[in-house]
Image 1: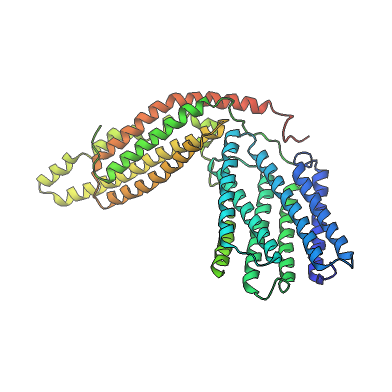
Image 2 (image 1 turned 60 degrees about the horizontal axis):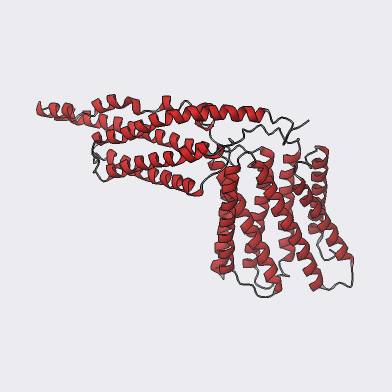
Amino acid sequence: MAGMSLSVQSVWACSILAQLFGLTLLLLRRNASKIPFFTAYIVLNLCQAGFMLVLGLIPTLSHATYARLSWLAEAITLLAQAVATTEILGLTLRPYPGIWGLAWRALVAVSSLVVLILVWVTHARGIGQLWFQLNRGYHLTFATAVIACLALVRYYSIRVPSAFKMILAGFCLNSCVEVLVNTLIQVLFHKGYAVYQAAWEIVTMISFVATLTIWIVALWKPFPVDDREIASRSDSTYRRLSPEINERLREINEKLLRLWKMEARPE
Amino acid sequence: MTYAFTALFGFAFLLLILLAWVLRPPKRVSRLDTAEGLTEFSDRTHVTFFPQIKQALAVQDSAYLSSRGRNALANRVRKERRKIALAYLACLRNDFQMLWRLGRVISSMSPQVGTAQEFRRLQLGLAFSLRYEMIRIKLLFGFAPLTDLGALSEVVSRLSIRMETAMQDLGERAAFAAKQASSLDGRGLDVS
């Protein structure tokens, strides 16, 4: 912490204040009980900041140990982020169990694909790079999965409460900026991670403060009543109609194809 | 290594664009996307206008005009009728899209959704869009047999009739779901 420049320290203080404000809003508006994992994520972030502060005050701590403990704390908050996001997605799709079932399968497929691609294209040299690349890989996978889920929600015209939409957008924005910054700075500076550490810290912190601002706007009001229609209890309609609709759509397509080939004949 | 970085950077940038795209507000709420709109589907199909279109596309008129030596007029009539065919094709596309959306509504209301069925419908939608554009181009250049549009219309017509019963069924289910939702006050994300 002592090694941080004044500008980084200022942004860091802003992020702490924003997190405290967000947590206060969660408690005051009684939203904390509705999204407990998201609340836990904010608390964990604050704990992480406190932990880093304590680590920085220990003079005998070696740089390697400091880095290892910092990344460990980061890994815990990233895990909490994934759980909080799943909670928000689950609440969004709660009235649509069928779509949720489809969504989580899509998430697993998309995430696996991204992880495979990342393993293929990245090669770490040393533990420092490895942490960075794991962090970037996580954010890339996370953002892809959430965007895939939001695309599915949009495809099925599912109404998402704006507060949830903003929270998810904040998570995604933060992850995308993390990936962009990690990659760009790594390309621009080949001399070593220590050279661009300050730049990396300030940009990622600013991104996080922006994300917190979005969340504060989302949490400003209590969450609205969830008046969305629930799915029917029986899936017999779907099982009966869906294949029929697909069959009819296929027929229209075939007719179009025959027309294209100028082979259409009156029936 | 640089290629990998460029790819990662590009991918992250693409994700930001996609994020903006998925979060943008919908242009309009289709009435078909609401439970009330389901029952209106059968009244809104354009296939019912087929007899008029068929008459407009009859080749006898054009042949008669040509035989009377009025080629200029015959060409003009053909062009105008081609425009009508194009408009009718667009209407058929609307019917297809309404049906496609109906499939999505049914899926969203179902407690279980089949991945294969959903993927198949997505595939059909993409294929339809592609073919529709190809036929439209053919019609624009006067290559496609206009009378064969009838075959298309018949398919949509039969479909709309068969779906009518389903609409009624869905309307009843939607009403049931609305009752269930209203009875959920005090549970979930309610605000005191």
